[in-house]
Image (cartoon, rainbow, N blue to C red; front, side):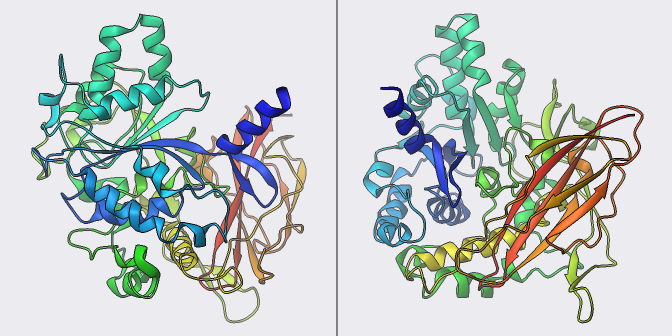
Length: 475
């Protein structure tokens, strides 16, 4: 009986990596104002290509400030049916892609009302009731709510729970929620944050989208190549000659895939850890604090512009210099251009996650032999190690490999913003398969994050990571 239970957990909770069932899949419910902007459809195409890595528990059509009186669940179902035409081929490349019928069964809808008009007594919808059902499941994993439009369906869920549950049970259920919203697109977000001060909530406050962290997915940045978000790149790598799912990917009207950052952090890649938004990853990096309302900017959405009353997970900035190819000697070098702002925390990974998207789009139509698959980083150390000031410690990644037999490159770097020790380390050579690092001198316990990035030389080039959190103790 015990063995059967463990097997069941393995099937539903874990993603089958090259090293076995080693990484827990994140479960998520999507709230989308699909049809308000083509970018929701774009994001659903990408999401379905990771449906074996992310445990999708629901897709709910909602309203927003851009679509106040309409929901469009059929538009989600249309994309899922198209996914069904290539699902078998995806399973040739990685196992676990769900049948399209199971995904169709979890498409729901919220009320076709704007914001708080859909929150209160007798305002339940199949969407809000579905969130309650999933939240009350006997599942130890957190439930991520990825909000691409208005948040009022989740707000109604919380309203009903507050009205019907004992205080202790309400607290337990709220503690399981992890919200990541693409700014506030109705007036229910600030209500939830004020009413449920312990609710885990990632948001860029205000409605000036151009300054939000998530907008870095489609921001043209001066000083780097922006090719991977160009319309030409999208046409060549996603839309054309990649089967029916790629053909459903619409052209950009405003910004490409503005909603995808709300689930990119859930993809299993060795870097992402959604329980620690301050560690950084494909969805950006966020810190928990009370934002300065005076520094927020008024945008164009018309959503009420109110100061936060408690800390939220919100915009944080990284110092960043990119590594660029070097023609002679060591194959990479640091670029002289330096960046520092909150958008850096997301676009610094953009080429990696766009290449990953392109490779998975290839999987829709290609054989295993004719497509690229990500390398597998392997380090000889645990993910968490403890050292003392001045101690030398080694990290050996020589057992890393590529399932396609491709050549691959190593890159070691520290991520000062992710730990408590903020002084950058000099890791040299940063591109060898093993490194020796001297722990810096500290007068109190500190942490630093060492990232290994392994990138193959296939087409498109794919990257995976290992993160080692080092605790440094004073002598």
